[in-house]
Image 1 (cartoon, helix red, strand yellow):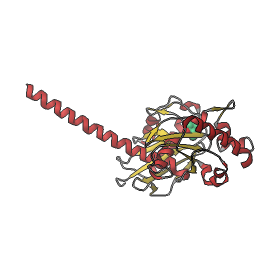
Image 2 (spheres, rainbow, N blue to C red):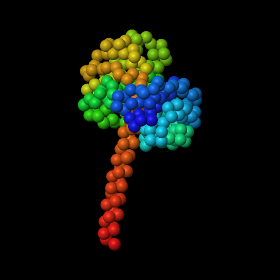
Image 3 (cartoon, rainbow, N blue to C red):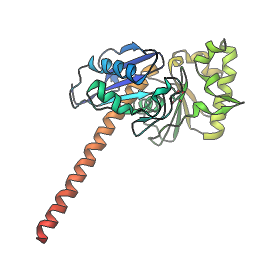
Length: 275
Ligand code: BGC
């Protein structure tokens, strides 16, 4: 696999999707591969499915692989699991994937991956200022990128609004759950994004997730201070962002190792002079 390609995997509530991504363009180099999320979505069943998705593209040892997960991830470990099996909480996601896929991976929150993808290649292309992204799907994922730096694990889909968890009404899944048509759902979105603006004052708001392909049905009907626009990478943002984040993490790791080697060499010379 070429030096400019990384693999991205996006674990969702209904499907696990993967594709190799050209890091120069942010485009898939092969068709996306999707397997329905196994139920129950336990670490074992999801780990095996992710391994299958990765194997499909036959990565080399050096190919960076990023995996996006629908929960808070700190240092590779899953901390919350609002829309997947509770047994994930406390699980080392990086280790689980390494065990099943036999490959090191970089792991991150799915909305963070989507935000990073949109920042590098999509609707917020390398834009300064503060960009807020919300993915409306099974849950509501949120990401904030300030002058190019991602603030991880924002979790503002769980803001309490009018006594409810915001995602109960603002997620795409809420439309079915509460049997809402566009007219019934849009006021919930308005309420949600107004609250986001009141608290964060973003310069730009991007809406992603499955619903972003129907954005013309609701974005023009929202009244907000900041421009609110659809994601450009649509549902592929998580895959692209995960792949790019894995590549960036590998690069940082290599630079750190190089610096360390330089320090070690200097220290060895110094102690050689003394003796
Ligand atoms: C989770 C987030 C996730 C979002 C979208 C929420 O329920 O708490 O971590 O990003 O769903 O999957």
